[in-house]
Image: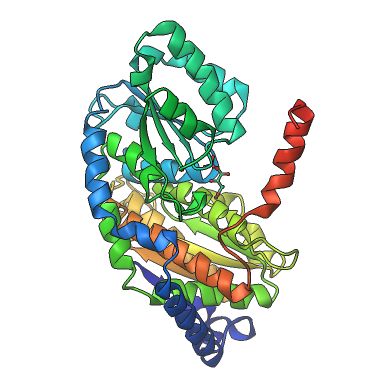
Length: 412
Ligand code: PA5
């Protein structure tokens, strides 16, 4: 199972910058109490890991959708970031370029920047493409704008355009009505699940299954994670403690390029869930080891003491990639040795500089542990939300910008 190593946050490791065992114990008690309360009336994200029957049904339906050359996901925020995370973590880094890939090429269009939409339209043949339009509300403008653009193309280029669309949406909204009127294939977004907590629902599972990811293993990892309560409780407790101590920046730094997008997903989870009431909200910052050692580490080591660093390391041994270049200090070592030494070096250096840091130790980046990681971070976020006294499931602050954009368009 995933382990949270928090040694480097303790007084014994970082002196007065650290948390005392007594304080941690008392915050842990709060965390476990919150978790018990949550379990009495489980919010949507806690129900998803147990939906094995639905996942089997998704797998079966996904199998019939694999025949396309391209899968284009149209969605934004919680309707896109989880998909990108699963794909980057669990499929080959050059998946789209591989002829032996286990599904269609995948493109996730999660922006209304027309340059990207236009470029994708030039790259793909819509007659060989399945569009999975994902929006819980069924009315998100960025998603609909891209959908309408491709819909027009589809209608022009193929009489069986309906076969090229799958809609994943909530019970109400424009897209639900559109799907019903046109008898399109649909998948539900379960009602109690908010966008950024929805990756383990149809939102993330369908595209993942079409692209060959074992979605039952994802759920297995997530459901087993429910038993490993120490991880989210301690993570939330430490984040809460350090925020109150003025460390209001949470750097999330995987030493795994496959988990780079997980950091984007985490950023949304943390920011939209905890940034509330003008008072609360650790700022999540994404960094990537070892790349950002050459970009951000100077700041983390010698900049203001306003950060708490979360490392993610993966305990894999393959591929190793031995280096043989006589006389050089790297000779006889492997690229993996270097990578591992760098993560350890970073943690040690920060600790020696009394900069608290912790590490989520992941046995392997596979479907099981990715499901586990997703669930643990969601649970930690909700527990932290309760500690901060905010509602981790709403996002009222994003409404005004949308409203003003629609006014500028002249539609309100
Ligand atoms: O977490 C959330 O609820 C949001 O970030 C949504 O995922 C995002 O705004 C997209 O919404 P929708 O799925 O309704 O298109």
